[in-house]
Image 1 (cartoon, one colour):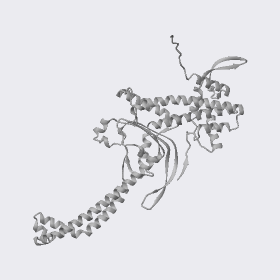
Image 2 (tube, one colour; image 1 turned 60 degrees about the vertical axis):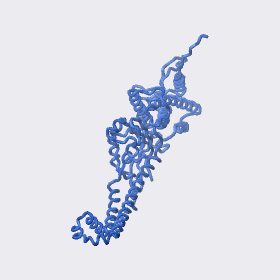
Image 3 (cartoon, one colour; image 1 turned 135 degrees about the vertical axis):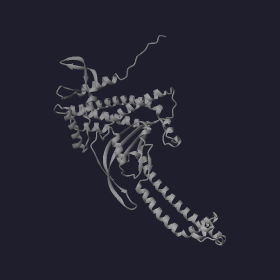
Image 4 (cartoon, helix red, strand yellow; image 1 turned 180 degrees about the vertical axis):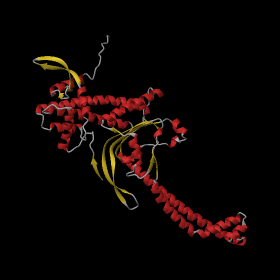
Length: 451
């Protein structure tokens, strides 16, 4: 199997590797390298703190609707509070996906993907009406080649699009909806009214429906024909072989019903023959039952084996491509988003700092993308505006020396002039800003207690 990766916003390196790339780029002297390392460490601590707060908020929202929760709620929410928390959870979770450089997949794209087939040849159906709400996001895609079995001994090479990371967040409607549709709730693979999160890797875009927990699968028309046509052929040949016994049995049955004239006229069964052939008739009946029963059992086993083969394909896809489930998903995403936020801010700051000329936003975007392409043979679509916004938000009051005087000024790590040129604080001032922000993250009041 081969793959060709497409350009994406995701930076396919760890944050520690991105820092090492900058340090080894040759644009900083030894003192600057030390200051830059400290700058990156404080920045990582800052983002870790902010994302830890987000994680705690998501846990608070998700616990009442978590289908896997094993904790008791001290204050169980009312239905109104639960709906509000579910809405807040979806909103924060979607913002988290965007920070982790995931992109939404629209309903139109989903429906098109459902119409296509790649590896798993099945008819599938997903009832979107059973969802109260849902989100479908992905990150990264590539073209993949694979050999698939089209007929019993023939294989065909196909090319299809694979989504490298897939997130599905959905909330099912309550029990009343399924009860009204006369669906046996005990046989469902999910709990009505609950929220589920699925995280998968390397899923063919044409097979996305199999990751939905309410998907219904059935054989394709081609598989039904391959199953039924041989069965009809074997069944007809079997009936022909036992046709003599069948004729006698039919005539004997008509005779026993009292239609003696019809039995004698059409089947040659007389009263004398009926009395004389009772035992042979019983033997013929046993032969027909054994032959047809054996054929029916064989066909049923063939059907079950084919169905097990289909389920095995689906199970392997879900099992070997699953990354996490429910609460574990947003914990994984927190780490991913934290890494992405850090990498983007570090790259933007480093390249503005080390540029020999003043850069505009467009020039910075091209400089970073070319840097990755030329030095590391990696194509990325850098989200420059988001990176610049992050640096601009890093603002604090610091001491600034100007012509021998020290003044307190409000400064941002990055700023832009009226012409769009970008400016960053030198490393010393940038460290002061980060240090001031970090110092003010933790505020407390001390109370003196008189004894």
